[in-house]
Image (tube, rainbow, N blue to C red; front, side, top):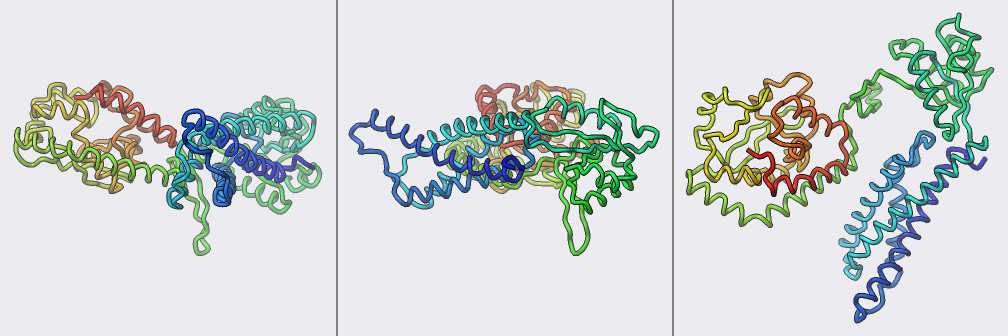
Length: 476
């Protein structure tokens, strides 16, 4: 049958491969047209010689691998178009970045950089068209009764009701619920949510033989470990796929990994989003960006150091002792903006603190040097932290690290902000910065960032940070 899941994935992979080749050719033609119109003295666009063809074919295979890496070929019945479009954006950006890097290291200097921009835009548009067509074809086929899956639901509670409701509202998923299993024998033979209760889940082996479902969806509470284990064992013997609609992992768990270490089955729970590839891209960007800014602004570093020395002598840098990733202490540096005995004076100013919680913030803080006000307003005092970004203790984007004494006063839920690498800017900086006077609101913004992290979110925060820094919004 043409719409079996395994074949669906192959069709999608072939379509993505062909779309990439077509997209590159179209981008080549567009670039050639624009190139010749604007620069008629320059010869024809580069030809598709053997090296270029090999590179394009290789990148086509790589794009398919990236789609697979981002889960584009996973269980596609539960995939929405918005999810498809998000994956497309990621793949298009990463593919072009890798293409630039590969051509650079190959020494292919004859390739104009504008072709990469045009290719990225062209591929994104064609992928959107391709995925939309495949999505609607699959939905149409399932509406006509093809490629549908017979599913048995275990449970008759609120979670089962919600699952049934979602499936009924998404008929194009191609899921037909053929019945429910219950733990209460008195409910057998009745109907719940318009579906028959065919048996108890204690008789799962007989049910699998009689009804022969293609999949079993378990919606009962995971507190019933014994029942779930029995269901899993029976389905394993029958070769029936099982899916668990569970509350066990909670709303905070972002990743569950099962490992077998020397015969020990270890289940690891992570409460932050983890994507090794995206994390690698984030780290590479941190290194490239921080090193570039340090080189470009090196004269400014010297000027600021001289101004601080002229106003208050040494030291130029403030040894910033904070708590970093996994609640481990790290050392970073800032340009010193306060008088040398700032900590002693602070004890006398605690009544002037404008922040609720462990963080100290004060308008017109008398400890700040004249040059310090300017440095703080435009965040120039934080330039030395780029060395910590380069080192790997900090990231460009991430929750602000707390001072060691501040961290000791954190409530338990507030400590989760250090479950990721801290950074120079985050949602707090672009959402009002010091205009936010409640520390709990600050932490909630950090947790919002952690729960929704993506490379695109980092990019948006960096873009929003630029006007905030240049205009000195919310700085004290």
